[in-house]
Length: 500
Ligand code: HEM
Image (cartoon, rainbow, N blue to C red; front, side, top):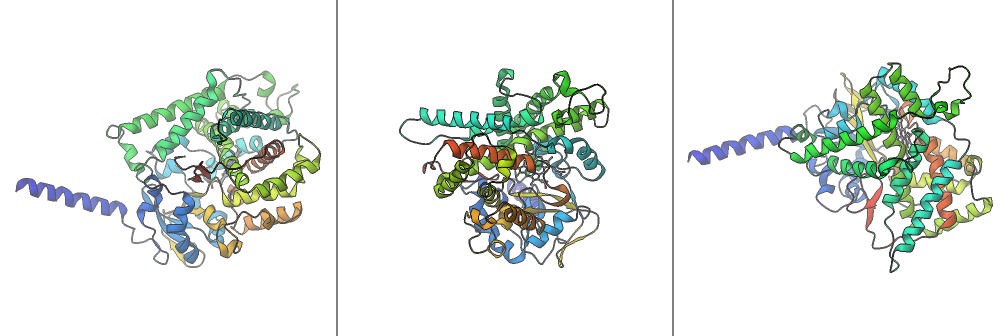
């Protein structure tokens, strides 16, 4: 009898705890729907791509109301998909302030992984990071030589891998794409040639990164990162924290390696023949550390984010490009014709700038397969905020956007919103560029975010993608292996089992 009473008491306590944890706070806006709490983690339990999940649970309420209440990272958030709400959210930096995982879920593996970096910081800290890193990331690339070299290496290795496969089936490109993307980030942001570094560091970093993404998106821990507080109970979290530490230490060691003298010289040093073009963002970060502008924790966090932002999204976009062009061979052929019309094999930035179909294809890829498809890293301050005219959001509430949602909304992009139509961007370089700017400013096209916190690597990423697509399409014709089971994951496309 006593045992029964004890079990009932524990059961009741657990029910209250779960209710307390999952209930929607009473001050959350009442005029937008609530998405069931399990939707953000459902991909862990059923084999569904993010597009299918969006269609099944989010599309209708988001298209009707423009915003919903959505449970992610241990709390209820507001998620927006209507251009005017997204515009208001991204434009008003002081109302919806940046607040990354190190503030939202500071005890989590995710927060330990990324730290407080230039993407998540706000106010004076962000201004400091930006003043140190902006010039290095946005450095003008006048010579595409290094990018062309890496693209050729990638295409060579894809062709070699294909030759080695028996029976006409396809190759798994992702490991090669990851290696390529890491090499490019090393060349351009770290003064580091990962190809020639000992111990095959690129592979170790790539594997650790894949493992860490697996830890972050692991069932249970993704929706309830609060459990990361208890590594002694959940032993796999110990492994997760340890992988994060290993990853960070490798990057830190690489970042601090001495460079050849010319690349270490400051812009203001006398007698140097180093041009500012030779400086890379890592030089500026090291300088800031040496001069005490930032401390070691800040240095480490920003080194990690430059490495991650500098390669991961391009890698995912390239994976989407292989998939789409492998199914849309008509687009592939049209691109090939445009490339052949240039009569060159090593494109300059100017050549690429003038290739309208290449630009349109790239924007269309970013529209349907945005590598960062959804993000909830802005927070209302100590006063309520209003989205549009009528959604009143209480203080200290996280608000986010879904690029995939707004990019695929028929009332924003027309009846063919879900189809891959590069022609929608226009026929000339100018019309395409203008459409990009217009759609970005109105909150309808946000692969790189918008306004003051838009991606600093946008120009570099677009150039890199153009160079590598030029080389791929110039030298290869390919079709998707129908056995590949590719589908949209959290970050663009991947094989159905991918956890990244
Ligand atoms: C296809 C490639 C890329 C995509 C789709 C992309 C997308 C984005 C997005 C959506 C944001 C805003 C994140 C937020 O709102 O919190 C962002 C910010 C940022 N990205 Fe990228 N990115 C790409 C490539 C790069 C590259 C190559 C770099 C180079 C290091 C880079 C550096 C940054 C930085 C530093 C920020 C923070 C800007 C700030 O808040 O001041 N990105 N990116």
